[in-house]
Length: 252
Image 1 (cartoon, rainbow, N blue to C red):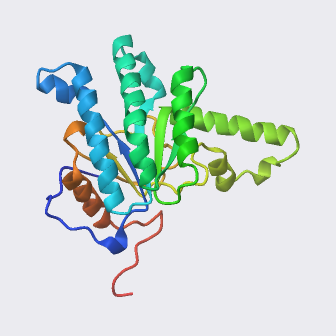
Image 2: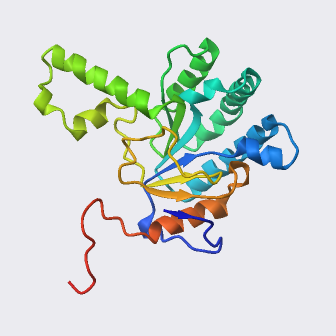
């Protein structure tokens, strides 16, 4: 795992592009604090960074992008900040959904919907239903998401199937668990990028990232741009993915 910024003039190898990129968009509040601004301004700048990233991912023809938009733990933040984040979500869907749809992008929402505000639920359903037939890229939005809760819910579902006789305990394997998760049908991330300088997953895609390559960047999310994305992809392409096996030697 390399922490740092790859030279922005680095060029990607289009033959080795990741199929699925996941991003933990961290550092909005610190970005604002460093500029003497309210945290809300950092979140607004973060939305602009997301817009840039969506366009760059589209230009690079990366089939899947997953963003960690709001974790199940984020509800513990001050009420005023949560309200601002929900307002930004509403504005983003209202202002950007048409463009996302016109670009043939399908939106999938993962995370718990229990207890969500009816207006937010309605917007999430609208985004999914409007884009459900799009067959270009897929934008996966992790909202009210926590990986441990996702895994627990999957286990409960499998346990119910065992209890009803649909599945034998011995038949439970990686495929069945993967199919019981929110991300069923979505390939596991090849590359996970986290901004903000932190080096942890923060309860994000714990099952799915078993063999994902991690790139941790010191810049805050509002400063993330096309050059940073390309740099992270170049770092990913420079690595040798072994998936638990020995790498093949060049002289063998």
